[in-house]
Length: 129
Ligand SMILES: [Zn+2]
Image 1: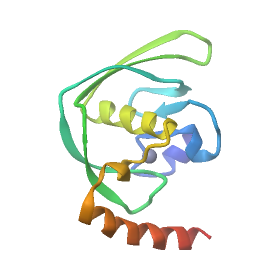
Image 2 (image 1 turned 90 degrees about the vertical axis):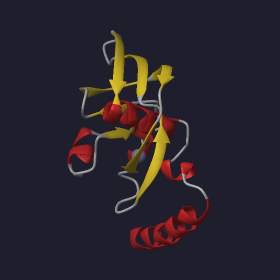
Image 3 (image 1 turned 180 degrees about the horizontal axis):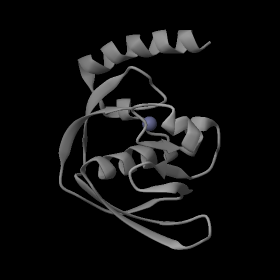
Image 4 (image 1 turned 30 degrees about the vertical axis):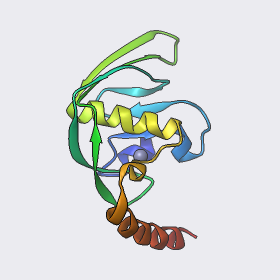
């Protein structure tokens, strides 16, 4: 997972399902190198920033997310982890946890913008086949 993430300039984080691993694990580059299974404890504030995803190269969209996130998890050795993230880290955590729940960043995009993205997505799918 880490090598996939580091291969991409936009890769702040990666969720296991993105690389075909059906586990509730994510890695976050800003924070720690090992995968962990995150649970959101609290979210606060609000911020809108442009967001991308390793699963959708070349596609970005403005997404509203909480500005702060507190996440707990267990590390590989079972040790308790607590992460208090702000700004980019908070955004990355929410984005990757969404992946574990089957939610993509484009799901937050509404109306016209989503229609534009849909065209791009179709091209992307065709190029991957
Ligand atoms: Zn993503």
